[in-house]
Amino acid sequence: MNRSYRFIVITSIIILAAFFINAENSDVEKSKSASSVGDTSENVDSNYRIKALKIPDNLSFAGEKVELDKTDIRERIDRELLVNTYWQSNALLWFKRTHKYFPVIEPILKEKGVPDDFKYLSVIESDLRNVTSPAGAKGMWQMLKDAGRENGLEINSNVDERYHLEKATRAACDYLIAAKERLGSWTLAAAAYHAGNYGIEKRLEQQMVDSYYDVLAGENTERYIPRIVAAKEILSHPEKYGFEFDKEDLYQMGPTYTVQVDTAITNIAHFAQKFGTNYKELKMYNPWLRENKLNNKTRRLYEIKIPK
Image (cartoon, one colour):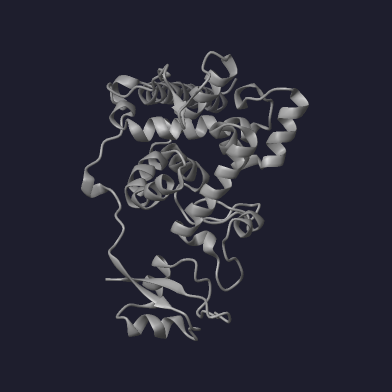
C-alpha cells in the first residue's frame, strides 16, 4: 500500500469516528432534554392535581331525588360533574352570566309555579346565550318555532320573541307545566323539554316504566337531567369545585327604562337616536327585534327597553 493511499484511509477512519461520537453525544443531549420536559417536579406546579370528584348523596332536581343507587345514573352524574368542573372557562362564564340573567328568570319561575331548579335548564340549553341550534331552536331557552308559537310567542322574520328573555321564560314555563301534568313528574317534564312530550311518553309506554331513571332513551336525553343536576351542584357550591371570583368579576344587567310602542317603526337606528342611544345598544337590550324596522301591522303594543 503506497503512502498516499494509506493517508487517505487513515483520514477517512478519523472522520467517521468523529461523526459517530458527535451523533451519540447529540442523542444523549436529546434524551436529557426529553427527560427534563417530562420532569413534573421542574415543569408542573406541585400543587396542581386532577382529582376524582365525590358525588353528593343528596342530589335532587325540582324536589325529586336523583336515583344515585342506580349504577348508570351515578356514572352519568359523575361524567357531567367532571366535564363541567374541569371545563373551567365555560363554568366560570356560567357564574358570570347567571349573576346577570338569573334575577330576570327566577321571579318568573316563582310567579308561574315552576320549581326554581329549572333555571339551570336554561344554563345547559344555551350557556345563557342567544344561540341557534342545528335543529333551529333559538334563544336562551332554545325553543323550536312550533313550540314557541304554541306557547304564545310571536315568531317571524321581523319579530322573534324566543330572544325576549322574559317572554321566552314564561313560554318555557307554560310548556313545562303542561308536560308535568301529562307525564307526572318535573323530572320527566324536563326530559320532555329536550325530547318532546310524545317522544318521552312513547318510550315510557313501550318499556312499561314511569320514571326517567328507568327509561332507556337516546344518549343526549340520558345526559340531559344529569347535566342539569351537575350545573345546579357546581353553581350552588363554587368554592367546593375550585372556582374563585369577586362580585365585581360577574356580569350585570345594565339599567334600562321602557318605552311602549303601538305603531310601526320604519327605522330602528333613527328611533334609537331619538332616545339618546344607538342601533347596537338598542338591539343588545331588545334582541327580539330582528330587522332595522318594526312592521306592527296589527298595532300591537310592544315594550322596548332603552338603556339609561
